[in-house]
Length: 437
Image (cartoon, helix red, strand yellow):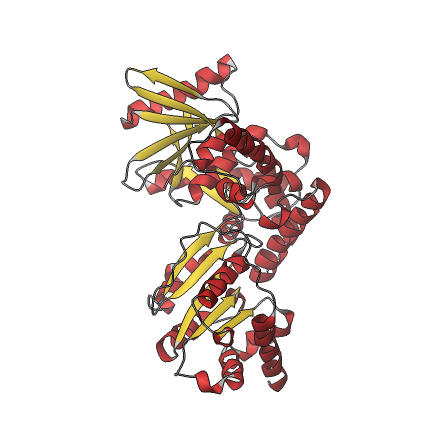
């Protein structure tokens, strides 16, 4: 216990005296609400710690003393014993360093990856009620958004999601003008940046990195997510089955899947994994912000859930680093990029199937509740492809009585006008810089 107390003191003092890496500003909308913990949630290496540092820097710039900043990353191996000791010793360590601050000065607590410590919710709820603190938390589990967590904390938390760099954040990282409209030179810079974004993806650490190093780091991310966030956390009895399942889903990103088809795939590899377990694996992938499921748009949840679903990944370049290149469909990667642009705005995204069994890639509702239809196609210059994509979108627009639809392409622009409405064809870079909120 004494040794742990000393370790925590060292960690607190190291954080107060060390350099503060604030990186590139992120578009999180993170806010500090009195009496509530502010939680930033997202996949590993998406920049959560950097966002916390940005908040530290903000308070320091407002005149808060560094001694009033209390920062701990719970992934620190020196803190592994906290899982059995509990979090009370953390507060004890801080006030043993600064006893005069207790109840007299506001202490700004930044707890990074706190979800690894059991019963953290009740601890945070208690200190918000009994101590003079402002609390920021980060974590890599969507369960921190759950109703269970809200109940345990009695409404004392607000959460914001953080994803790897969006294209707008990526261009901001490169100090490029990214507010539309653009002049010719600015557009050329943006188009070039999209080519780089296509290759590198959005994880901040790999921006500008050589390909072989980027692939190696992506593979390290994948292993960390798989083993630390999934296999270790849930004590999974079939780790090889989980690995093969995740690789299969990555190789088929933006494609349909069903639990029956996945069960058959694993059975062909020699795994006797029940359907219920596979469904649980999928939910855990989503919980770790690694993979995402999109369901059919239907008024009946039962029908929506019973139909085949589509799978997407947290980062399109991560897909390319993990799966064999020969299997990578560039059109599917573009669709994955568009999905993530929408997912940053809302979790309520579906695909649409017309009465004639034609499919539109995405439908979601904007902030005033109107449905928006988006089709993704690498190019509509091929006549057969053009006809298929436009017919599906027009049929969906007519069924839903929508007068404008969108087709996102790799680099094509067009406006297609019909008596019933307009289809706007736009390059991906422009779509990603538009405000879809």
